[in-house]
Image (cartoon, rainbow, N blue to C red; front, side, top):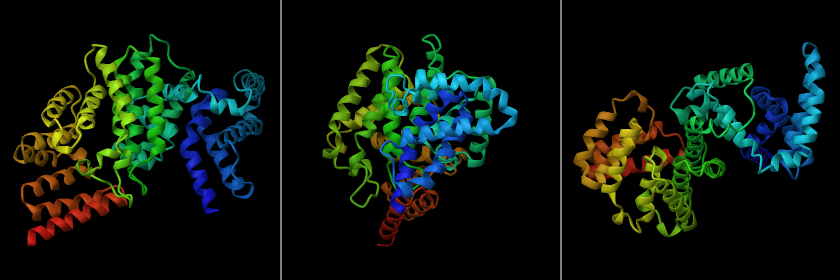
Length: 422
């Protein structure tokens, strides 16, 4: 029973976006499609522990949800007329577009999931709503997880998602990939969504895993599809390069106990050279288009500096600082400033970086961002101020999102405290 529960959870994480996307194609309403998918999940929770998990769980969920759609319309008297109008269309769509539930789920050509991303990123929605809605439907993230990814209260995220679904329904947004003329305007939001999904997987904000491969894999798949759709646009390739280069370090990011391993301490022989090769090729393609470098291509160039360094001492930190300067000018944010401060400390010394980090501690946007006190603690320790470093590590541990992070930070705090008294 417990194993089946884990299986259902995993299936939902991996397949919910495909199920919702397939349903949107049938019912034409994002909110209704998500409700139906959730209802199908409830049926699965009842049946799978008894009957076993089907061979194709996503197709099973899609078929059940479609049947629930028809049942729901039949039961609602005030929608009877609508049902009479829709039923033939539903059946016609099912026969013409989805003759087999297996085909719906495995449809690589149509890529319903990518259509779903563009619908969720439609201009009728605010940027925050676009990102929140797509994270919910694409990655199956809870409102709590999205809230942590956004540094936003989960109640606000929930309200944002509800309003977004209502707005899409009222606007009757078509379930389609935008035309070639519309694509560039819609691209920025889609790229942001895909990268946020990847980031949630790269540094899981909850649970007991440092990395969530399902989210990273889905984000990378969508990024590759998007880059193939837009080969003359540099940023999709830049984003693919960034994700491939970061993903290349997955195997070395945790130790045998599942605890996070810092970049300098990672066994670089475990980095995935195939992904590095793909990432560098995507970066070369983006740069080779000879357009102004965007934020994803700049971040990919930073990741490439790490990927090319055979040992930590060989890292070109001065080039990384220069790239962060360009990124801060293009896309200023306190997190970019924090990352730039780390690079400055490595290129020019701790004394240059400490004032920047200490100034960031008054920025309310980072009040719950555990990496700020963590970086501060590291700089203090490197400056020989171990007692202060111990306090900063403990502060970081108090707001760290995962048990692994908390444990690692408390170990660093204890080590700093030990050095302070010895």
